[in-house]
Length: 303
Image (cartoon, rainbow, N blue to C red):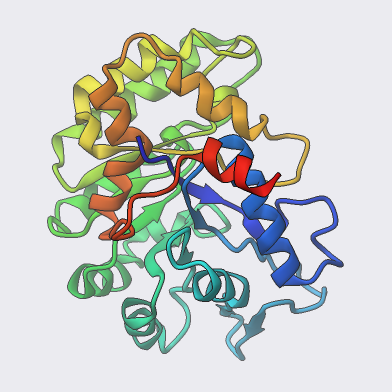
């Protein structure tokens, strides 16, 4: 069973990421992937600009728009095209956003976009300011991850106009709820499940450990909720992600994966889709021509 992680902040995965050489980070991150049992990873090159702070791997345009650069992802794909791809963030305020999208479509290893209207953009999104941007993504065939926090209600107006855009709802579509309020978590997931009626919408099962579960590993209270999601969307429209990074707020990478592998409400075929085949299909990200070496054999070869 191939395991594809659809969100890893690989450039911030290790504790010394701020000072380490990118090439060294990539090679050491591969060792971590092999130890966990992840065959391929979609890199989300995390670079958030703080107003007044230094510009790192980004350019600030005169109108305040940000051009996000992806040197880490590009290097990882160049070195290990069988193990990595990366997503791109393009600011809708960039006057050349369509040209940027064309570049993403044509670059090796750049397989999709990610937008987060919750970051100060909820009001423009509600006004419909993203429609031209997302229509361009639809025209160019770029799958798009979207994170709306608890404002999924804003998405339906777009879905009616974008029937061919492959949209993947981020982070289970669930906001981090109030502590100890499982009813709130279930209600939020109900709103996510309602979107399953749109055939171009998929779900990224990511960070469910702290957004839905109220238990410790192996988070058994997630299993019936994941069953509900798969019954609604089908396993072919659900993909797993760890959101792995160096911050202590995240659950351990291995726990995120093995809690799903242990889930007794899913069949092995459903797990195959969620853990790899869905990502390969929805993101148009071909698997390597050669079958991946089992992680146990890779680890043994490195000893």
